[in-house]
Length: 82
Image: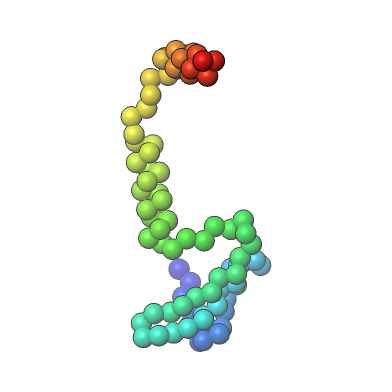
């Protein structure tokens, strides 16, 4: 882990496209501004952890029996035709 000290309005670059700037320091909180291309996803750590947890839960969910898939598709088509 790289550890840097920055003052108010100072920043760092990650690669050539992502800039992180210290916007405000209040007590034990630091407000950061992040400038990045639109195709770069930026998540707070707790949000990303929840997304990962939900995805793992979805993967672990019971899988449908694909042997019945042709019957399911056929029934759906019949409903559409009505």
